[in-house]
Image (cartoon, rainbow over all chains, first blue to last red; front, side, top):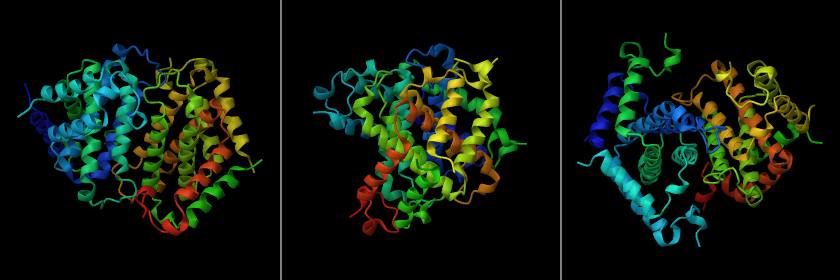
Length: 113
Length: 113
Length: 113
Length: 113
């Protein structure tokens, strides 16, 4: 079973073989994450909830991978530990969305009573 | 050292304790990834390249974590293996961006000669 | 009946009273349009097609206006004529999406046979 | 000098000749605005502030027009008056960003003292 670190090393190797780190300002990486997220969203444009995902599975996999790859590149560029920031955010979310208030509800936390 | 699977289990546990899977259509997850990516990008609005990242580090960590969490939720909803899709996409990118053509260049692959 | 120019003058007056033109690089304006579009999209997160638009009408109006205001600011910053660029794009789209091929179909033009 | 209404009529005519109104749910229009905004932003990816705009002018015009066209379609779908919503939002912004506090500053209003 591969670790997060293993996967990140593959992503960084790809970047460094091309000498691309020099372009990876945090701002442009944030733009890139946003653009890849838009390409993922485009798969669902005009689709309704009933998109036959199977027909688009390969496209979705590619675009989701692109978002994740740029997230990995940003984590590396800013020296952030992915496991740590996710664990910390889940803890924050535990407080924002206490189970007893949000169970089975999709309301945003700001709208919770 | 934690595996990708370990981290994903934490994300899924958070979702399932709240009975939120029912809301997680692929389309709404794709929207959510896009919205979180925009919140991450917002940190860099009006900033120039010279944003003092340290002052915004906590905010960036939180927003990057949010993008990653939703990516994990989409992978789970569509039964995609994160390690596999990233590895496959890196292989595709190896062909799209051969080292000898793109070394040290930021040109988009469609513009490569 | 007000012209496009009248409306644009109001937007520019707002900017210039605040001496904000200096911040309006095309790149940051493009980021801003994207961020405002995300805020508009957020209204529809988790909503299904059956969002009761009336309950959110005011929010939608505000966010749609924000997108349009930043588009106006970009047009001004780059000295583009809104009427002209829309008219030109509609002509391009006429060719990309000929009526006889796309009537009543939502397929993307690249998928048209 | 053309009015906003004139321009909107051209956009609506394009849509109706293709019998496309049936696809234009507010949610999918919001997605479309977001996707077109991303295509506009893509022009500035990896560019620095010093993008030579002239080389990309035609692309920027097309993408900015696309954002505006979808905004027009959303305004029509939800029966919103573009002049009215922009005028109202500028009034709201006048209060959020009083000239004496924000003159020459790019700080977000939430950060104003």
